[in-house]
Figure 1 (spheres, helix red, strand yellow):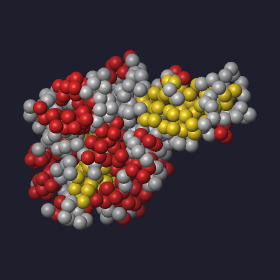
Figure 2 (tube, helix red, strand yellow):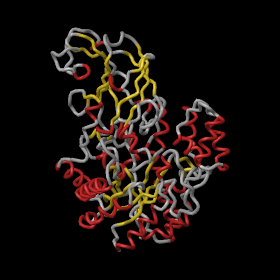
Figure 3 (tube, one colour):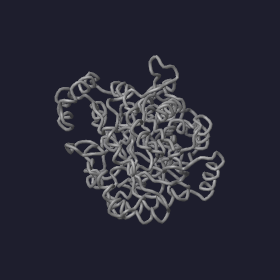
Length: 173
Length: 351
């Protein structure tokens, strides 16, 4: 679902933290028609210009809170990502992205289910790694996006309120 | 009394996604565009901050429904067994979840909740006292490929189909008979009368398969194989085909999982019906009349009519999903699709 519309086309920006470019971010929508409890959001398969960025390098910003790791989101069992709302995916990458166009392959992993399935216990112990299609919710393909890096945040002149990867302001980038 | 028409606002999910119509605009369309009153919702899709909506939202919803003289028919509720992540939700926890949804449905004025077909029967039984207290019926969905009558179905082991409990309908009827409670019911989905993949689904799967020729092979040969056997055969003949199991399942569909006549036995238990459809096209030679070529509506509608069914059939449009992988210009118009569906429902209700 919403294959071509999961990333907002004009949302790719570098992230600045303590004067350093520490990564990039882009705005995403939920690929499931009902949204999800945040605990079910299991990260993304992200491949930018041929380089994969695993879930451990990702954070997710939603509901007006600072970006959170997917380990932290696992515990947000009663907080909902509403279907209408846009979130931001933060990706750790020292130096960020170069100006110009970038190709991002994306698969969203949401462990939404419709009742009990044979693989339930396995998913508790070993949640699917995003990208395989398992746990990919309603969009099982890897969707590709060509995005232009937005210049407004590409510089290193100002500090971003949402410090990359949830580092506290003043902390080490 | 006659068959009543309504809409599951699920049908307008794309319109909501692109913020063209919010839930108020959708309700207004049902009243003004379709001239009817039945409303079904997806709890998580419509309710802001589910499962903790504000009182303001509840008041606003009830007030808006009253303004347009609408009927809150059914609220669709879910079962995410991984919500807690550190363990698979127990049946008792699942029952608490269902009870919460029932209370929420009652608050919003809904008469029924639709539970998924995979909700275990003991979960439903545990929630039954709450349903009775709040005067909200529990309708279990009968969704393809689940049968009304189990017959000779073989239990698949692969994909979503592995979760199928072929006795789901019988279990609900047994529970109702045993308890004598009219709060136990069923929500058949017209998808059970789908006999072939929709053209929009075929086109989508072909666009994304690494070996699109596998789709033609599946459609031609599926009748000769069992569910799991077909998946193995496709892997063997088209290595690296890149078609997920659920899309193989969709392409393999060659006969409906239920016979329209099967409806007769469950009519007393139906709380509402999902009018599933994928693509309404004009019937050749009949301007202004529409059909979905992959779902038999005519026979089940005749049976419902002849049996005196006077509940709601709520449109459930699902064809948009297969048309969202290209540019914005290729998106389907959900409002128009639902209007066409109601032309058909209205016509077939009259007989």
